[in-house]
Length: 240
Image (cartoon, rainbow, N blue to C red; front, side, top):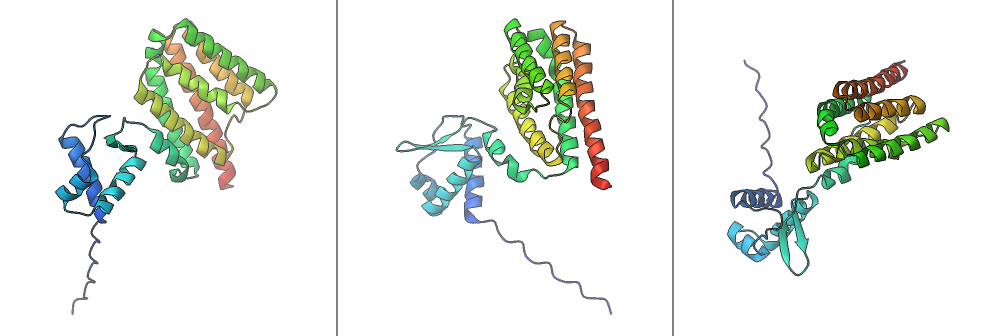
Protein backbone atom coordinates (compact mmCIF):
# COMPACT_ATOMS: atom_id res chain seq x y z
CA UNK A 1 0.00 0.00 0.00
CA UNK A 2 1.36 3.36 -0.98
CA UNK A 3 2.14 5.77 1.81
CA UNK A 4 -0.36 8.58 2.09
CA UNK A 5 1.11 11.98 1.34
CA UNK A 6 0.28 14.77 3.72
CA UNK A 7 -1.95 17.57 2.50
CA UNK A 8 -0.16 20.85 2.10
CA UNK A 9 -1.70 23.64 4.16
CA UNK A 10 -3.45 26.40 2.28
CA UNK A 11 -1.51 29.60 1.86
CA UNK A 12 -3.05 32.37 3.89
CA UNK A 13 -4.52 35.14 1.75
CA UNK A 14 -2.66 38.45 2.03
CA UNK A 15 -3.87 40.94 4.61
CA UNK A 16 -6.40 43.39 3.20
CA UNK A 17 -4.21 46.45 3.65
CA UNK A 18 -1.41 44.65 1.76
CA UNK A 19 -3.78 44.06 -1.16
CA UNK A 20 -4.79 47.73 -1.00
CA UNK A 21 -1.09 48.70 -1.13
CA UNK A 22 -0.70 46.74 -4.36
CA UNK A 23 -3.79 48.41 -5.80
CA UNK A 24 -2.45 51.87 -4.93
CA UNK A 25 0.92 51.03 -6.51
CA UNK A 26 -0.91 49.89 -9.66
CA UNK A 27 -2.96 53.12 -9.64
CA UNK A 28 0.19 55.25 -9.42
CA UNK A 29 1.89 53.33 -12.21
CA UNK A 30 -1.06 53.03 -14.58
CA UNK A 31 -1.87 56.73 -14.26
CA UNK A 32 1.75 57.77 -14.71
CA UNK A 33 1.77 59.74 -11.46
CA UNK A 34 5.05 61.53 -10.68
CA UNK A 35 6.58 63.02 -7.54
CA UNK A 36 4.26 65.73 -6.21
CA UNK A 37 1.12 64.40 -7.90
CA UNK A 38 -1.89 63.94 -5.54
CA UNK A 39 -3.84 60.77 -4.89
CA UNK A 40 -7.66 60.91 -4.68
CA UNK A 41 -9.16 61.33 -1.19
CA UNK A 42 -9.30 58.31 1.14
CA UNK A 43 -13.10 58.16 0.87
CA UNK A 44 -12.95 57.94 -2.94
CA UNK A 45 -10.22 55.27 -2.82
CA UNK A 46 -12.19 53.21 -0.29
CA UNK A 47 -15.32 53.36 -2.45
CA UNK A 48 -13.43 52.43 -5.61
CA UNK A 49 -11.67 49.51 -3.90
CA UNK A 50 -14.72 48.36 -1.95
CA UNK A 51 -12.92 48.45 1.38
CA UNK A 52 -13.10 50.46 4.58
CA UNK A 53 -11.19 53.71 5.05
CA UNK A 54 -9.06 52.09 7.78
CA UNK A 55 -7.63 49.63 5.24
CA UNK A 56 -6.80 52.50 2.88
CA UNK A 57 -5.25 54.46 5.75
CA UNK A 58 -3.06 51.49 6.79
CA UNK A 59 -1.94 50.95 3.21
CA UNK A 60 -1.01 54.63 2.84
CA UNK A 61 1.01 54.52 6.08
CA UNK A 62 2.87 51.45 4.84
CA UNK A 63 3.66 53.14 1.52
CA UNK A 64 4.83 56.22 3.43
CA UNK A 65 7.30 54.07 5.37
CA UNK A 66 8.66 52.84 2.04
CA UNK A 67 9.08 56.40 0.80
CA UNK A 68 6.48 56.04 -1.96
CA UNK A 69 3.82 58.39 -0.56
CA UNK A 70 3.74 61.37 1.78
CA UNK A 71 0.80 62.88 3.68
CA UNK A 72 0.58 66.66 3.93
CA UNK A 73 -1.64 67.64 6.84
CA UNK A 74 -4.82 69.34 5.73
CA UNK A 75 -3.87 68.96 2.06
CA UNK A 76 -3.84 65.29 1.07
CA UNK A 77 -1.65 62.35 0.03
CA UNK A 78 1.02 62.80 -2.65
CA UNK A 79 3.51 60.70 -4.55
CA UNK A 80 6.91 61.24 -2.98
CA UNK A 81 10.16 61.86 -4.81
CA UNK A 82 12.35 58.75 -4.87
CA UNK A 83 14.82 58.49 -2.01
CA UNK A 84 17.14 55.86 -0.54
CA UNK A 85 16.41 57.21 2.96
CA UNK A 86 13.88 54.49 3.95
CA UNK A 87 16.48 51.87 3.03
CA UNK A 88 19.17 53.72 4.97
CA UNK A 89 16.88 54.10 8.00
CA UNK A 90 16.25 50.34 8.14
CA UNK A 91 19.65 49.11 7.02
CA UNK A 92 20.99 48.40 10.49
CA UNK A 93 18.11 45.98 11.13
CA UNK A 94 18.50 44.03 7.92
CA UNK A 95 22.22 43.53 7.52
CA UNK A 96 23.66 40.37 8.98
CA UNK A 97 26.80 40.43 11.06
CA UNK A 98 29.03 38.21 8.96
CA UNK A 99 32.30 38.40 7.10
CA UNK A 100 30.54 37.18 3.97
CA UNK A 101 28.39 40.35 4.04
CA UNK A 102 31.52 42.49 4.30
CA UNK A 103 33.23 40.65 1.46
CA UNK A 104 30.25 41.01 -0.87
CA UNK A 105 29.81 44.71 -0.04
CA UNK A 106 33.51 45.33 -0.59
CA UNK A 107 33.29 43.80 -4.06
CA UNK A 108 30.22 45.87 -4.98
CA UNK A 109 31.95 49.07 -3.87
CA UNK A 110 35.14 48.13 -5.75
CA UNK A 111 33.33 47.48 -9.04
CA UNK A 112 31.19 50.61 -8.70
CA UNK A 113 34.04 52.98 -7.93
CA UNK A 114 36.68 51.59 -10.30
CA UNK A 115 34.12 51.57 -13.10
CA UNK A 116 33.17 55.23 -12.65
CA UNK A 117 36.46 56.86 -11.69
CA UNK A 118 37.23 57.66 -15.33
CA UNK A 119 34.16 59.87 -15.59
CA UNK A 120 35.19 61.65 -12.39
CA UNK A 121 38.62 62.44 -13.82
CA UNK A 122 36.98 63.88 -16.93
CA UNK A 123 34.66 66.12 -14.90
CA UNK A 124 36.24 66.91 -11.54
CA UNK A 125 36.95 70.56 -10.76
CA UNK A 126 39.94 72.12 -9.03
CA UNK A 127 37.66 73.00 -6.12
CA UNK A 128 36.70 69.33 -5.63
CA UNK A 129 40.36 68.32 -5.85
CA UNK A 130 41.21 70.90 -3.19
CA UNK A 131 38.52 69.40 -0.94
CA UNK A 132 39.89 65.89 -1.53
CA UNK A 133 43.36 67.11 -0.54
CA UNK A 134 41.95 68.72 2.62
CA UNK A 135 40.16 65.51 3.59
CA UNK A 136 43.23 63.35 3.02
CA UNK A 137 45.33 65.78 5.09
CA UNK A 138 42.92 65.34 7.99
CA UNK A 139 43.23 61.57 7.48
CA UNK A 140 47.02 61.84 7.69
CA UNK A 141 46.89 63.82 10.91
CA UNK A 142 44.56 61.29 12.52
CA UNK A 143 46.55 58.35 11.19
CA UNK A 144 49.76 59.68 12.73
CA UNK A 145 47.95 59.72 16.06
CA UNK A 146 46.77 56.16 15.33
CA UNK A 147 43.17 57.36 15.29
CA UNK A 148 40.32 56.07 13.14
CA UNK A 149 38.87 58.48 10.55
CA UNK A 150 35.61 56.94 9.40
CA UNK A 151 33.93 60.32 8.84
CA UNK A 152 36.74 61.60 6.62
CA UNK A 153 36.82 58.28 4.76
CA UNK A 154 33.14 58.60 3.91
CA UNK A 155 33.59 62.24 2.84
CA UNK A 156 36.44 61.19 0.56
CA UNK A 157 34.42 58.61 -1.35
CA UNK A 158 31.44 60.95 -1.64
CA UNK A 159 33.69 63.72 -2.99
CA UNK A 160 35.19 61.36 -5.57
CA UNK A 161 31.88 61.18 -7.41
CA UNK A 162 30.11 64.39 -6.43
CA UNK A 163 31.12 66.06 -9.70
CA UNK A 164 29.04 63.54 -11.67
CA UNK A 165 25.87 65.03 -10.14
CA UNK A 166 24.21 61.60 -10.20
CA UNK A 167 21.69 61.33 -7.36
CA UNK A 168 21.18 57.60 -7.87
CA UNK A 169 24.93 57.00 -7.68
CA UNK A 170 25.27 59.19 -4.58
CA UNK A 171 22.46 57.27 -2.91
CA UNK A 172 24.01 53.91 -3.75
CA UNK A 173 27.40 55.01 -2.44
CA UNK A 174 25.79 56.01 0.87
CA UNK A 175 23.84 52.74 1.08
CA UNK A 176 26.93 50.63 0.44
CA UNK A 177 29.00 52.79 2.77
CA UNK A 178 26.66 52.44 5.74
CA UNK A 179 26.19 48.73 5.11
CA UNK A 180 29.93 48.11 4.81
CA UNK A 181 30.86 49.98 7.96
CA UNK A 182 28.00 48.52 9.95
CA UNK A 183 29.37 45.08 9.09
CA UNK A 184 32.98 46.23 9.51
CA UNK A 185 32.29 47.35 13.08
CA UNK A 186 31.23 43.78 13.81
CA UNK A 187 34.52 42.39 12.54
CA UNK A 188 36.65 45.29 13.82
CA UNK A 189 37.93 46.10 10.31
CA UNK A 190 37.41 49.87 10.32
CA UNK A 191 40.76 51.59 9.64
CA UNK A 192 42.67 48.52 10.82
CA UNK A 193 45.88 50.22 9.62
CA UNK A 194 45.27 54.01 9.60
CA UNK A 195 48.55 55.02 7.92
CA UNK A 196 48.16 52.46 5.15
CA UNK A 197 44.54 53.54 4.61
CA UNK A 198 45.57 57.20 4.45
CA UNK A 199 48.33 56.38 1.94
CA UNK A 200 45.84 54.58 -0.32
CA UNK A 201 43.58 57.65 -0.42
CA UNK A 202 46.52 60.01 -0.94
CA UNK A 203 47.71 58.00 -3.97
CA UNK A 204 44.21 57.98 -5.45
CA UNK A 205 44.11 61.78 -5.25
CA UNK A 206 47.54 62.10 -6.86
CA UNK A 207 46.42 59.92 -9.77
CA UNK A 208 43.32 62.10 -10.19
CA UNK A 209 45.44 65.26 -10.16
CA UNK A 210 47.61 63.71 -12.89
CA UNK A 211 44.41 62.89 -14.85
CA UNK A 212 45.69 59.33 -15.09
CA UNK A 213 42.61 57.11 -15.35
CA UNK A 214 44.43 53.78 -15.34
CA UNK A 215 46.56 54.70 -12.35
CA UNK A 216 43.53 55.96 -10.41
CA UNK A 217 41.66 52.76 -11.22
CA UNK A 218 44.65 50.66 -10.18
CA UNK A 219 45.04 52.59 -6.90
CA UNK A 220 41.35 52.12 -6.09
CA UNK A 221 41.61 48.42 -6.93
CA UNK A 222 44.66 48.06 -4.68
CA UNK A 223 42.85 49.89 -1.89
CA UNK A 224 39.97 47.40 -2.01
CA UNK A 225 42.40 44.49 -2.36
CA UNK A 226 43.99 45.66 0.90
CA UNK A 227 40.58 45.55 2.56
CA UNK A 228 40.10 42.01 1.21
CA UNK A 229 43.37 40.92 2.82
CA UNK A 230 42.23 42.29 6.17
CA UNK A 231 38.93 40.41 5.80
CA UNK A 232 40.80 37.21 4.95
CA UNK A 233 43.02 37.56 8.05
CA UNK A 234 39.92 38.06 10.20
CA UNK A 235 38.35 34.97 8.64
CA UNK A 236 41.29 32.91 9.81
CA UNK A 237 40.96 34.38 13.31
CA UNK A 238 37.24 33.63 13.45
CA UNK A 239 37.68 30.03 12.27
CA UNK A 240 40.59 29.08 14.55
